[in-house]
Image 1 (cartoon, rainbow, N blue to C red):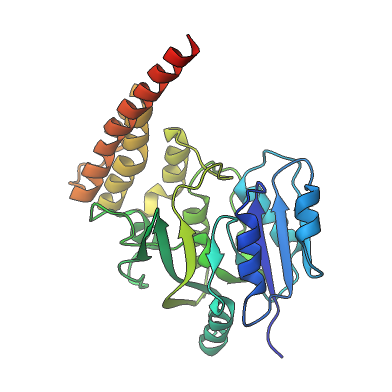
Image 2 (image 1 turned 135 degrees about the horizontal axis):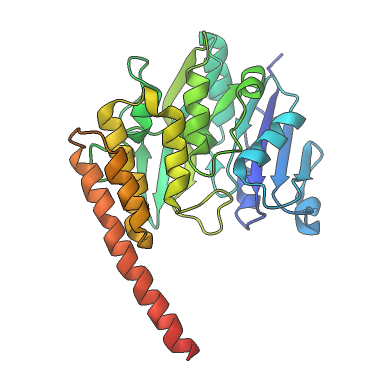
Length: 301
């Protein structure tokens, strides 16, 4: 018999949720349980009416965030494996089948795939290079050697995890940002855990979707993640993270305190050029924000 698979979809009931659900239903290896975790006080009638027999919607009570929603899904999951799917992403039909087959063949407890990354009308295949076990997975995720992100890339919607391991590791709901990176770091770092990577792009990810369940531009959220894993980052990876996540957010919001933190925490190591340029984009974002605020004040006056 094929192993059972539970799917956890955290959502704010955006319209894209129904596309995500249809992609789960289209899997060539049927998913035995689908858990739609709505981060609101209650599940809407529209969502309830759309669900089928093996699909259940659960409400968190509202305002709990993506990590809590995924843990709620884990607590209700019964499958041998659990797969996570963001509500604005969608899967290719053979995604689950190929991952289960690879996990069984290699005795892996963690699997992820390449991703088709959508930006407007353009698409890219990520990651640009696969992860290998000879480097700290955190370094792989946060380094920025080029101008475009994706040199190292593991997306939560591509994950298939042994449910026992996922329930042991769990999502860190104390983190306000980078919960997916943190989850992957602790999964791959768990004792005697084998992983399997499939280079086929079996997941579709939409960049910068509106009203995401876990989006924040506040730099302290990135500093919190850095503090948790600081001791394991290489100096160059740490330098890149501080520039791309903390310095950029501080510049984009005009927060001088964040820039002071970045300057103090930055190791005396030359960062990758891509990280420097990415941080500088924060200035452009700040200018755009000021223009938008000025226009709004003009319209309201």
